[in-house]
Length: 77
Image 1 (cartoon, rainbow, N blue to C red):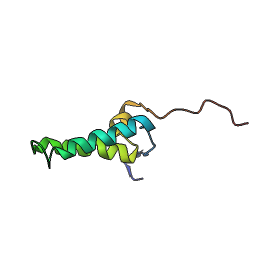
Image 2 (cartoon, rainbow, N blue to C red):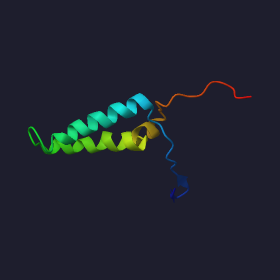
Image 3 (tube, rainbow, N blue to C red):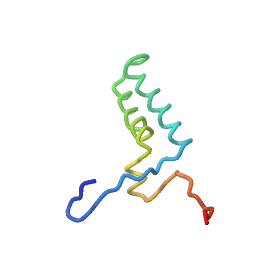
């Protein structure tokens, strides 16, 4: 990716399978609020979990050094 003054941000997956599914479902449900039901503009906030779910990347997790992707602890040798 691009770099700004020597800092390079890499987009490694940091949202695991179950959490990814939950983010997509919750994001889609919130987005529906913008079209059906109370038709509130807050429904557009659903774009955030929806996008992070589809991309399997959360910038806040990246900043905190957190990941919900399971690590492989077995040796393949």
